[in-house]
Amino acid sequence: MAIPVAFSERIDALLAEFHVLSLAACDGTSHWAAPLFYVFDPNNARLVLVTDPGTEHGGLMVRNTGVVVTIAGGGSEIGQLRGLQMRGQATRLPQARIDGGAVLYQQRFKVPVALSPVYWQFVPEFIKATDNRVRFGYKERWPR
Image 1 (cartoon, rainbow, N blue to C red):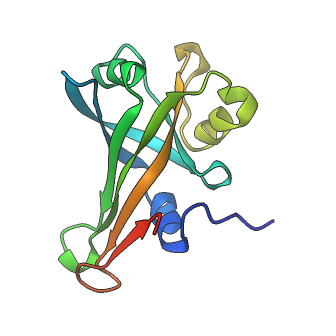
Image 2: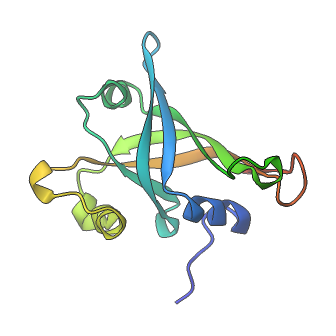
């Protein structure tokens, strides 16, 4: 069975290539950024992540679901730089076990169930991908 294209072939490939994002949240007064593990779920055009709502960024996401996310890689060679800048909504997945979010996450990252992980989804509203492997400064935007 073919995996559906969630955003574009290049954007999907970048999302699948990496596994750590930097999420920045704000409630209008306070703001915070944090690195988080994620799993790309192309069937639902989202990223699934785990974080405690009691953390700085988790509390901000509870109060304001609008967040920004960056993902980057490429080492020390500028010609290999690639990554994504995204804006969207981060919401808790109380039904994560039913909708498959927890299964996807647990397949990639083994979080002990005893820790009672809190699953979230990040659904992008705007994505800008950069991929210097195509050519220096190459950009692709979604939606176009």
